[in-house]
Amino acid sequence: VDYWVSKGASLSERVASLVKKHRKQAAAAA
Image (cartoon, rainbow, N blue to C red; front, top):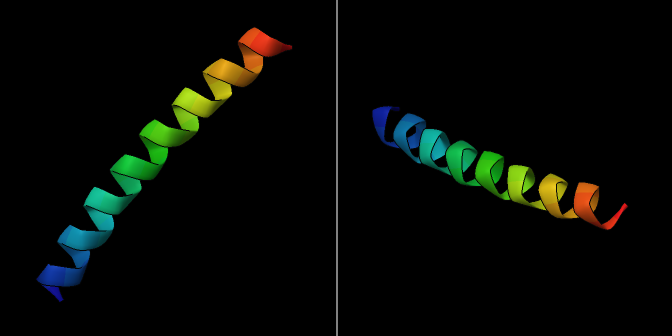
């Protein structure tokens, strides 16, 4: 379980950073 939790945590972090970057670009383009 700890393995999946750590995997999910790192994945969520990457996803969050990607979403942030994407939103920044979208806001700049708008």
